[in-house]
Length: 91
Image (tube, rainbow, N blue to C red; front, side):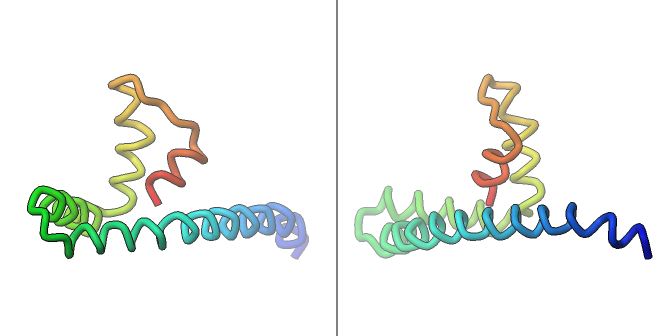
């Protein structure tokens, strides 16, 4: 029982971090989804095609793979993020 009591502060920090990230992701993803939806419905063929490929990429790859690419892959080409920024970009 003592171990559970000792872990409560750490778990509460994790809950606070998760809620903070969720709010930020919601605030960014909802306007972004409208932009992508309007681009997908646009009559301008290159924009429509770009939106289609973006949707297929985001829906077709697992989130963990995207996160690993952003955090571990991009530094190989000189683009490095700290872990919080990489998580927010991936989400």
